[in-house]
Length: 390
Image 1 (cartoon, helix red, strand yellow):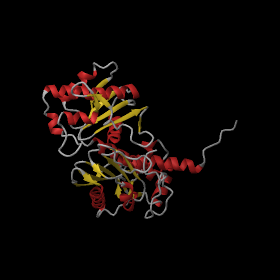
Image 2 (cartoon, rainbow, N blue to C red):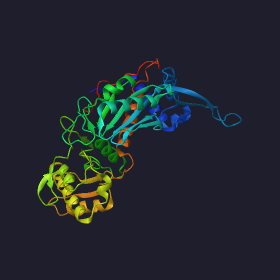
Image 3 (cartoon, helix red, strand yellow):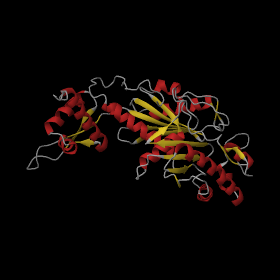
Image 4 (cartoon, rainbow, N blue to C red):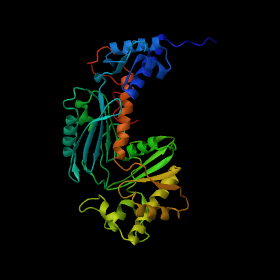
């Protein structure tokens, strides 16, 4: 059987990808550097640099290596062009809206924040989101190629809309981040729940290579993300992991909904279902044990249904040492239990996950477009219509 040889166009595409990825990692390189780092020949790299320069994706920086007098030829340094654009990583959370502008090298080039009230109304959050996104790109002259949004609310998988479920503590009404951001972004707007993003960040930064685990978030709101075979499982409509209504062990040993435990222990913020984090941290030992039993009942249900290798506990009170100890003690008494440990990431874990996704998608978009010769044109993404995860 005759094996078909790869086409010349495919070889050029692969070469251009190698060159672009090296420039994303090292910021500026000579053609000799690119050849050494990629393992490609110098003539092949030279042709790739020429193509990418003509396409407006790579530029000659004007910097030169020392040369002459026995030190070899003078080399030119090349770098990614500013016209490759940037991406937005966005957090919509109870304490405010944060928008970061991320470059192809992974730098956070700008950050803006807007506070919102508690509980928030959809119109207020939309205004804050629109204003923060506008401020993040003011005066940059660089196109925003895509946006990745982390939202502290259930997210409809097909559309990216934030939907309201019973007892949700944060948003009053529904919000469509895709609709709000599309006028300001050249490509897709990807929206997912904040706990899913935090779980992805844990997966990607854990040195042991986590592939099967449950991430339980315990803060003002309650949430869970299931990672199986390395993938976050979102469910049919996108609201898998909403644990507030799971039946668990109440403070007096009765079966009760998880969310109601906090009302029974007087741990809610006045007038809302949001959990008072400071009050939880100050619980007396007896109430802390009751809360530990309630959480352990939720963990038992998660383990029975999803069979994770371990459970990570995150959130501002879930990772508190005394509370985590109460949870672990109660959970070890369950018929089925797995290792429980605190999440590694404690500072903006959801935004960290969204930022990593934004960077990955931005780089992929840049690599997919080396043939483009008009750098001022709007970039087209392979999944332009994919506003959610599917």
